[in-house]
Length: 491
Image 1 (cartoon, helix red, strand yellow):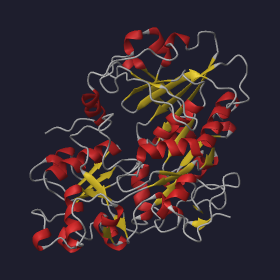
Image 2 (image 1 turned 135 degrees about the vertical axis):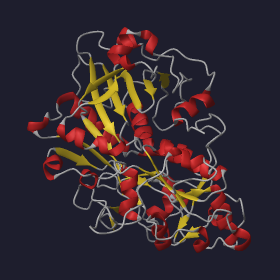
Image 3 (image 1 turned 45 degrees about the horizontal axis):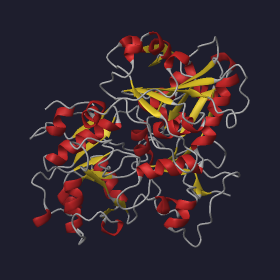
Image 4 (image 1 turned 30 degrees about the vertical axis):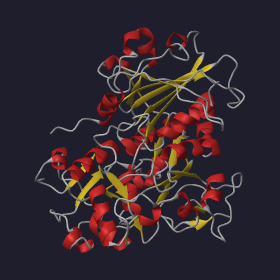
């Protein structure tokens, strides 16, 4: 069976949804010379949901359209100048472009070196109306609903991804990465060209196929099939590390024996390519190889997507280019009653709502996260210092005159994006979408003098963390993120 891209599966799930009129007609793009500001952002996909809500807040309510296909997006709207100050009167609209192609790696070196990547072309959409509202990847859908904490409604608009003329090639202005540029191979000169900030905290999990979760529940005396936190099975971190590095091969070594044994005792891995910030995050926390020379890393992928769905896989490790590949691979293993570990952040829900069908049934409900040393990857456990698999994500743009530095309106928009990505309004809305059947997880605000955390003695409750979703710990005590840093209390 050939695996389809997640975008195609999502299209199938959404099939038949009626299109709607755009909030701001594409003909308004650069209607007058220079009246539309543009900023081009590349890199990690983990921040894309947050970026979309952030840009919506920076727009006048009811004016934003998000043009999307595959790993490309262009958010077009009228600027809310009450929130985004310092914009010249002649500039009334903006487009925030985002390319997720290549993941975190493309959010670092191409930004530092000003090398070209592909982005959606609003000029092409304006000149060729047939490019919009005909997408096979993201159909035009009804507007999102506004929330009560400052994120207005906006439209998702499909773009015909089969037409190459819908793209343009130019250097990104800024980039996202799950970890700081140095951990993604940026050299000293490249790092020196960048202004680097940590907009928020991203939590990662230890996902396994659902069949394994159920077997672990039985082996550990828990209620099989229960989705509560109390019935989430736990694995010791050193055993998790051993499995991801190939030093532990069989589920029987993790207690799945006798009545709880799997027919195929082999441990399979569904990981990411080396340029992935998610993969690098696992090599920071799970193995330590990203931080210390000579330390064994997560096993590299040697298999193909076909191994994930084959009755008898030829390889045990598959490395996908995106998180969608991990979801699809784990679903394939689960459908074949095999046990696999995956590589995912907590923005991916274990069970997605039936409406809207954002994840197709074919790959939904096929994985679950396990506890690490007795603690789930919840907001509350992170805030209380009990769960430490999280990274301070990184946003960077050029500051060196030798490398086309960002300035003017672009810099104003970039700085406001970073500021907004850590606000309670955006994070609360995002975490509503990321909530798991057993509790809250996903993103937390990075602590700062302007956004101080609550004290953690006595430990915070779920309600207290929901009211103030701010981490009490930091990995950037000197100002910029250093994810190899052991988390320290912010003060």
